[in-house]
Image (tube, rainbow, N blue to C red; front, side):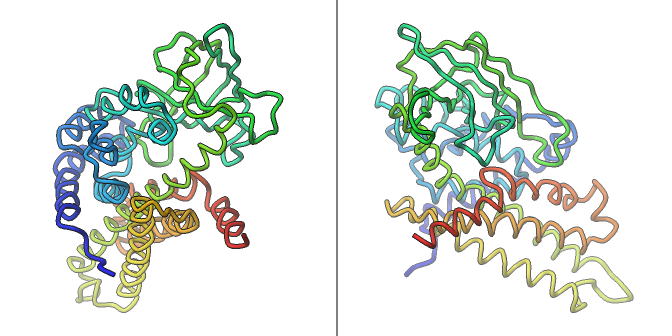
Length: 379
């Protein structure tokens, strides 16, 4: 096996890293402090082919596959996972269109994502149902040639800045629980859609998160994405793949923590010697590096398998689980190595510490990943 990236992927990695350092790092602190979405960076990313880069060229993307998408996610996350999410997450939910949509839907909705014109959101989670996907209550009923949708969605990424969203709703009320859901594309400016930005998040503050209320929202039945009654299974497949990107976020953030900690350990003098010369510091740095390399193996292999048509959902779930743990560990170690300075906002490690926790929570908590992996192992 050849573990080296192809020349094209290495060039993509270098370009994404340089973009993140040049366009994201200088504004990351302010965007975090002000909870500020950054559309101007999104448009610059589009100019560089970084939006929806996994989308095939025939639909306007760069066609770099999911490994390329994971690499972009990793490199942008080194700069800021909040602003980075605004970029690699601009297509969030649109994977359902690529996987299950009609050819007409693909040609209409995928290219504008890559140019920065469209931003998608996945309107899945509800106030009383997150990990329990089968507990969603939002309903859509047929009325003439339309769907009429009512319900509330919570913690929606890109919630107030999106142009379109994929709404998970009960459409087959009489069917068994897992066969009652469908996915419907809703333009965000549709009458009856109310979006409220959520403030006061611990981390990931530059990423837009919202509560979305849908009150008698009417869209054409042609906006159905995929097969009626198969929405639950479509969503599970969606998360099986996007878990890899959460692990890639964790990889990038962890690498940033390690790089900053190595630099500080070399520069900081304690008791007349560099901080990095002490065994306890070496131990922290070593454990960070080992966990990062293990995580990289999960991320790259899981993404590569998707591109080769042989996805391993157990591996993806393992990567997501390890990713959250690695990011939290590395961020915590980074703060400890920086000591009192690590607690101050002038040093990035305090921000990364706050950001890291979400990687154990969204798109499946670490407890949910344990259940997923455990069940898959016993099949």
